[in-house]
Length: 291
Ligand SMILES: [Zn+2]
Image (cartoon, rainbow, N blue to C red; front, side, top):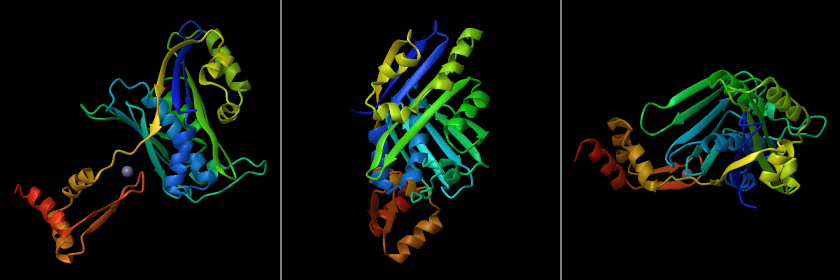
């Protein structure tokens, strides 16, 4: 089944719901970055929530970027999703495998707990909106719950998970439901009850449950509003890196030209490598000079 997001509302429009299946994109990220289980669980969770946040964007070129650094061995985890459904991401250390005594992956140990979650919403027009909150548990779901409450003032329940086995990623996804400002005490109590009883999202996806079914299992009166396709895609290109080379200082560029060895740049998101000849570096320097 392909990756997608289903958006719904329920309880008389007092709750907005997003359900996402992200198995394929998380598998792709695991292959590209050679991730071990705990690293891909952490990266996959951040990618899944970021994809959900971007699914509300109006324009294809708008983007949401989530950056987590909890001062744990994982280093920086970054995921970026665009309004057109493209998602990409990376993790500082892809080779982490920590498990708890109960056999579950210990994501918090990899991420760390004393750092921040930064969310950048870029509309491509005005200054990007940036929200920063303290990490809570390093389990990602809780950290985004806190972010939504503090930075966006939206009470939310964030369920997100990546299920791994020996072969790799079995299933990944997320379920987020958020209370609208008009929510009644009954609606709040209903959501609290769902949160207390719901099964892990990745387990439900692994069992083959359709996203609409998942939403209606918890919110029987849900009205489905939209389906959106999402996918792993990195839009890096040699042209884009050539443009970024032009932002280096003249001294640095001249030094690379004098070395006469060309340059090699690897994309952090997808590990694609681009090589530049001395002539191309000279071209970048000439453009800086307006030649
Ligand atoms: Zn790339």
